[in-house]
Structures are given as C-alpha cells and as structure tokens.
Image 1 (spheres, rainbow, N blue to C red):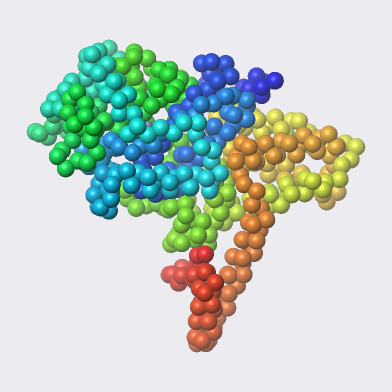
Image 2 (image 1 turned 120 degrees about the vertical axis):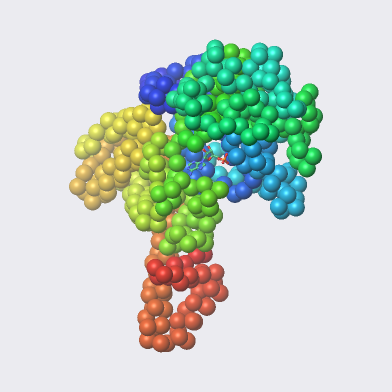
Length: 492
Ligand code: AMP
Ligand code: ZN
C-alpha cells in the first residue's frame, strides 16, 4: 500500500495563510511547479536554499508514493533588471558586458546551476523548460488575454490591464494587498510610459533596436514579460489547474500575483491549489542577493575561498545546516553555525555507522515504531525538517547507548530502525554518505589549525624563516593561508 494512504500530509498554503490537509487533484498524482533561476550569474547560496527546500518537498512526496511531475523552469529571457518592467534584460546585459551571445550566458549559468544542484545531491526536476523555448505558447496566451479584454496594446507592447481585471477579479489576493492601497502608494507614471496605470505589467515588450533577444509577434519584434513564461510553461506541462506552485518568498509579489491574474484572465481558472513559499537565507542579517553583493557562492564554501568562513565545508554539511531550519523561517548564514552543524552531523553519522554491528537483545528499551511515526509526523507537519533531524539525533543517542550496553533493541526493531534511518537520511533529506571524508576533513582542518598556531608562534619569536616555510609549503600542496584582522583562515 502507498504510504500516502496512511500518512496525512498537511502543508502551509500561502494563499489561504493556513496549514491545510493536502489532497491532490488526482489521487496518487501530483503536479508541482517551482520557479527556476534566472541564468545570468552563478546561483548563490540563497537561491540554493529555495531550490533545496523544494527538493525536500519533491523527495518526501515521492517517498510517500506519489507520482510527482515536478516542473522547474530556466528563465533565459524576459527578466528585466527592475521588476516594474524597466531596465535591460538581465541576460542580454551580461552578454553585452562580456561580449558574448545571450545564449552563451544562459548556457554557462545553466551548467553552473546543474553542477551545483548535483553537488548538493538535489534531484533533477521531471521537466526543465526554458522561457525562450516557449515563445509561441506565450504569444498564444497574450492573444487569449487580449480577446478576453484584460490587456491592451500600445506602441508594439502589450500590457495587462490590472484595473480592468480587478473589476471582476481580485488582484492582490495571494500577497494580501488591495489595489486601492497600491494605487494610493504608487508614483505617477513617467511621461514616456506606454502603460495606462503603474500597476499594469508587460505581457509583451517591443524590443529597442539594440535589444538582441527578440522574436516576431503580431505586435512587434520583441520579447515576453517575465511573469508570462511561468504561466505558459506550468499550463503546458501541468494543465490549467495543478496542485503545488513554489518559489522564494520574494516572488510572491509581483511575480506570483501576476501569474494568478494571467491564468484567471486567460482561462478563468485560479491555477494553483497550494502555494508554497520558502523563506530567505540571510548573511549579516540581510537577504542574500546577487544585486547587492551580499552573498556567498556554494563553491566558495566548498573550497574555503571566501572571507566569511574559517575553513571549507562540504555540500552535505551546508545542506544539513539549511535543513536544520524550517523552510518558512528566515535563516542566517555564519561560520559558527556551520562549524556546529559539522560537528553534529559527524556525530550523528558516526552513530549510524554502528547500526550494522549493533548487538540485539530480548527487548527494546525505546519504542521504535513510535519513533518512526514521529519522523513521519514531523514531515507531515509542513515538511518540518528541523524536527525530523531532532528525531534522528534521538535515534543516534539511542544507538550509542545500545552500543555501550546501556540500552537494548530486538532484532526486528533493529531492522525497522535501519530501514527508517536509511529512508529519512538518504531518500528524504538526500544527504550523501560522506561521513568518513567528513571526519577526515575535520582531522585535516584540526591539523592545519595546529600549523597556523605554530606559524603564529614562530612569527611572535621573529623566526620568519619557519613561519614563511609553513605558509609556502602549505601553499605548494594547495592549502592557502589568509591573514585577516580576526586571525588566519585557510582555503583548499
Ligand atoms: P532568481 O534567479 O533571482 O530568479 O532567483 C531564483 C530563486 O531564488 C527564487 O525562487 C528566489 O525567490 C530565490 N532566492 C533569491 N534570493 C534568496 C535568498 N536570499 N534566500 C532564499 N531564496 C532566495
Ligand atoms: Zn516563475
């Protein structure tokens, strides 16, 4: 029997702002769409947090026995610098600066994204469509919206008429805004804007002569508006009405609000049953973002080549750090937090390694069935990974007690425990078996820390020959010391 028949999943629906019992449209099947990256630069760890949050959702739904079609797009056109339809296309801008083709920009960063996701052991989505591969579908939707009277054409561009739409629908229902407030708080349109109202958003933009990314359409040679691609691709692969739509919290408005409006204007259908939004990863208390430079790249963490961390951390430890917070909570990134995570992770995995050599007894001093159900309860409660991880630590403690002869477990309970740990650690959390290399990595960093201390002592004694030798010989084997105001750190 499929697990989902007796594991009742509830999830927080950002649309109703409540936890709801999850019921798919078609029993046993789930359609899930998650907004993918805009491929104009390397994904930073903040982006990864959102994608890893949805990897956890995907993995758990599959674990429950659902057949999930997971669509995550690649935004390779249409995302302008400014969310209010102004500025250059982000990919075209990068292409202009680097003097390469936009397709080269998209290709470079799509590859980087895939490699990063692979390092984190995230599963690929079932379908990964691109915006540029769906121009025809986007034009088709614009034609329908125009026919239904919710858009207008001006000088070769087409805009969604938010005021008109709001006469019969509610624009703002996802983000909890209302149009009157938006109008009261908006600035006057600049004289040259083609929009009737500042709230209107572009469905199609006429390309300026210098704009390289352009396609023919009934209105002009131009390009689609950013919000439209997700409506086109989700509708094409999941239908006009599907189960789950996800993305980062910052996409709720305007992006997802506009997606709802487009679908309602196009096929009179609220497209999504459950909206899920992942919260932000912060650095120094501020949102990690490409635009501000307040971010860290995954590779900078894995190599230690950064100014934030004292040493390198593996993809699994980095991911474990993120899963120790619930996906709807803000999480701040720091060296201390990662160090604590690494210690905890190694401790837990060391305990799990003992599972195969554990002696069994006549009785179990821990209720294994109840423990296993509490792992499901955690995940059934809106994918609560921190509670699941706390339960895994409980199991690790118990395993160590059995090993020390202070607790006991029956052979059949041991089998249940082994299978459950394997499922939750590898299938659901998607952690990788790197406990041995992690332990070695801890030993390596302890050794380097010792050398850093000896070098410091040599310098204090003005023995610069020794201190330079330590630095140079470490560099020769690829370990680079960096002297900073808070001491010396290293990268590999
Ligand atoms: P983008 O490539 O800018 O379209 O963003 C890709 C995804 O990363 C979106 O779902 C964003 O909401 C998400 N995202 C951006 N910054 C952060 C952050 N600091 N923490 C978590 N998710 C983020
Ligand atoms: Zn989207």
